[in-house]
Length: 232
Image (cartoon, rainbow, N blue to C red; front, side):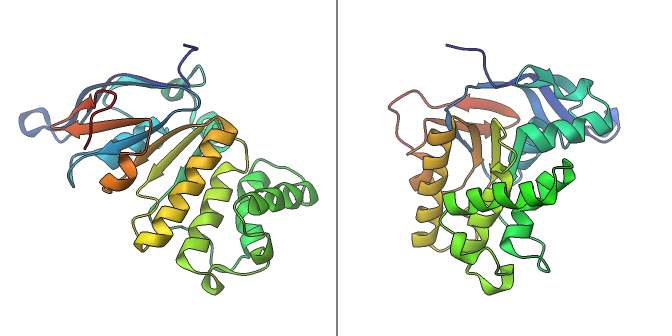
């Protein structure tokens, strides 16, 4: 198989002084290839969100390395790291985190404007993504004028507008009803296949997890993986 798009080696994360150390991650090893979509499962407080933030360059590990598209995230300067994340890593959260005063189009444009793309070009590219998630007719609406599922679709479009290779999703359907959650999940699945992303998704929903390519479990700071064909 080709080189992994995401590679984590020896990840440890601990808090507090050595005498009272709380170790959340205890040597996590993980690879994810382009086109793969993996579920990350674990009980509340097991460190799933911490692991996701470390893999996205938002929280530095106490030990270990994270490589995305061949780049060591924690060897980068603060400014270079922010630029790299903007271009190469997309984030989707349980809460859509859209800016309420801006339209759907303007929200999706934001990462492109941060990357200093001319506004007209950013608007064109953002409109393409909104069309792709089925919301071109909502591009002039603000978040408060849209349903929860529509807001999350806008958030997904924003995460993908710069063309990242890696998508990190932290309970992206957690605030949605069952029917809407399934619709958003299927859309994510389709986008992942179409764009050849590497996607790691935290979820508590076994119905969704079982349909992904891989199922990973974070238990007592260590990562294990279901064998192919195993059920949850």
